[in-house]
Image (cartoon, rainbow, N blue to C red):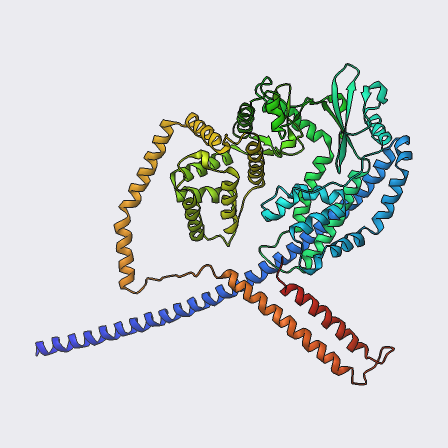
Length: 636
């Protein structure tokens, strides 16, 4: 009996326990459902939040872009007003003699302003710009026809291989400046106004015939009262005002072009480029900048004036609009036969030039930006650098990167080459490291059979390296592109003067010496120890990572993300083609629709009976058709 009671009690307890567990399970299930519902609500809220955030960011971006455009417009208007005020101020500052001599030029310049936009557009049409853009030759001749501002822009752009294709840069290097010399009376009046003295109070002798004439100024030979032979560079009156007004107009036109060109990640920001060119031109219009360059070069880049030299600036005769320096009595290194005839050892001259140029680049970090034959003279038995309007600068960090590039080339180290290129430039979202590695390997393969550094051509080598960067959407800094152009130009001079010498070999040897001098054994061992310790810690974690990966794979939690690359250009091309086809179809529909409406009796009508709405439709369809044809025409 007692056993039966115990059994019944246990059965009751079991039932109660079962019911309690069932209720607990139901309660947990209910909580689970509530939690899932809450998670779903959170997910929906997250989606809504992301959507709202995206819309808010888009609105803020749009508002920011609107404010930026407004700021740019205000800046342009302010610049335009400043240029106009500066022009009036400059006219007022002219001496009475200059006002009288320049009366005709001032009048013609004021008339020219009113029709300058039409003149620019007509010159563009003359050179077939609207038929698909400019070829390199057409771009050069167009700039020559447009005048000194555009010639100067072309000369600056010829060194910017990061902005223009190499074929365009090479063509722009041959720009001609079809300018007539200043009237001698005007040149004398400018000097007198800038110095506050009469010509007779400055010069014992002054030649009215200029030594050379360019778009911004011209140079005159003279002898000072103390017997010093000098050259005075005189800026053309009104040229600064004319160039500033042209830049205001150019930026306005560039803003219109940017506004109708569509959204393209690779599109060149014409306004920004013009602002950069304007800043460079402003420096060239201020002769004090070139004077400072010359002083710096003489003090820092000329180690031994017994071997190599450059002109000396006459401070009291140098201002914003004139610059006076000592006269270089000699001739260009381009006259190789004359140098040999006069008893010079061209290889010795070449070695002096190479040593000094490498000193400029590696030791000073400031180098001659345009070292062509005309800017290297030979006087009194030694080379002489002249014309410091274009000076390049390169930082120690970029020099170290160039050293890494050369070492990577010598050792065939692809990874170091890729890392150096990416560190030197600015990569874009389109940069694909895998493709960059492939291109770097192909680059190294081209030079793997080179056993002697003397066999390497610096210009070709650096040009190939820049092609690799450009092909992978890596923008190199302007200081590097100027160095590449300067090296290529200087190497061309050496090939004509002393073909037996190799610039790359000397430069590489100097870099190796520089590395040895900067090598710190203790620091290198410490860095190597830190890297070994870090590698050991990571290696110890490999089994743990492998076990976790296998566990996730077995439980089905492993996800594999695949990314297809290399198809973006094809997709962009297809999208562009589709847009053009849609525009062409719409143009045809609009044309035929307008033709059909011509048969209707819709009012109002033109004088010849065609409904006005049909005429408007014809105009829009034809304009749209022409625009579509231009868009679909392959660019030259």
